[in-house]
Amino acid sequence: MKAYVHKVKYYECDRMGITHHSNYIRFMEEARVDLLDQLGYGFEKMEADGVVSPVLHVDCTYRKSTTFQDEIAIEVKLVKVSALKFSFAYVGRVGDEVVFTGESTHCLMEQGRPVHLVSRYPNLFKIDEV
Amino acid sequence: MKAYVHKVKYYECDRMGITHHSNYIRFMEEARVDLLDQLGYGFEKMEADGVVSPVLHVDCTYRKSTTFQDEIAIEVKLVKVSALKFSFAYVGRVGDEVVFTGESTHCLMEQGRPVHLVSRYPNLFKIDEV
Amino acid sequence: MKAYVHKVKYYECDRMGITHHSNYIRFMEEARVDLLDQLGYGFEKMEADGVVSPVLHVDCTYRKSTTFQDEIAIEVKLVKVSALKFSFAYVGRVGDEVVFTGESTHCLMEQGRPVHLVSRYPNLFKIDEV
Amino acid sequence: MKAYVHKVKYYECDRMGITHHSNYIRFMEEARVDLLDQLGYGFEKMEADGVVSPVLHVDCTYRKSTTFQDEIAIEVKLVKVSALKFSFAYVGRVGDEVVFTGESTHCLMEQGRPVHLVSRYPNLFKIDEV
Image (cartoon, rainbow over all chains, first blue to last red):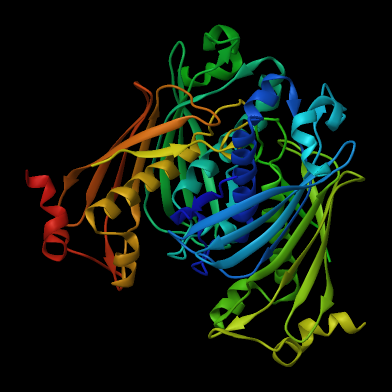
């Protein structure tokens, strides 16, 4: 999979002159949307199927500040899958330097009820078993 | 009507140390939501009715920069009503000083079709005729 | 300490109709800014002293979705203090129901160097020792 | 000049399922930053020179809604230059269709004082005279 690149915008920087920490949570979303697109399971396709994907947990460790015009290359991996939940891990780099690491956990919901992941999307969620 | 007050957040300020200009468009939305609430025509009630309110035009003139913790008092008025469109005018002040003025124009849509304003919401849209 | 209340804005909600998860990281910032104001150690005062406060880590667990106009009451507590780092814990409620919990970790920097917390702000950082 | 392309993010869409109108003001900023980069007058270079560029006015007309994953190609042109102010005009398209038009007006400030545009940046601001 190709890393997703986010180029930091002027409006994403704060009074300290650095990328505001809340924005990395958005960059993580951009990166997993891109991963799912690369895998052929886009959010749009899921939403068209009536499936939504709420976030259950997110964490982010800020290792080095970034700023306006920095290009953050973000690698995402599906790292955990259980019957109803799955997690992605993220590593963001500017050049060779790790600037953040993070993780997010999600479920899928259909008509208000949780989706059993492996039976609904066997090709997507077998990744974990490798 | 009571002015709406927005206290500027840290994450709303940019590298110049001032409130990023895009955020005033959001403050204007907050202020008109508050006005409609005061008038008893909340967005939520409209959305429950199946009516949505797209924005057709917005403009904002920045007269004086604001920053973190500033309390911007925003006055909103319904200034124009035609068969299908209506406009609000905004004046934002910190203390006695005008920091921005703006205007936004909207329509209402129901099942993909424009709503005739005066016949659908006669109490709300007669304001213009005073 | 009084809980900080954030009323969810229209522009903070996403296509699923719920508060976008990234915004809770911002609500946590609003709540700790408010706590520091209540304690008399505002960000502005620190910034005027030449002290900035980068975020080192943040996590958030989403327990129940919130939406437009919900009033989230957020309690913040300083939960950990070491020589150079400190952490806040957050609990957000709508009515009696917990909607999210989170934690953030910070340091203070002055002229590019980490500030020794207890010697610089003894009144603020003794809280931990109780 | 090459048009700037913004691909709409999930978190930029609102409860109506469309790109929130405030975000177009940010896309306009992205597009003019890109134009200045193409011209060799990046914001970073200006900021390194101690010059900042506050926004004086912005307006946007929304012609057609856009949504998640849409690629908006934005053309920007410097349309007006006076001694102290300059304006950009924007046209955003998805495919062949115009989705928004806008304009923004700016000045340059150096040590709290307005910069005389043509004498300070003769190559950039002569564009208008063509």
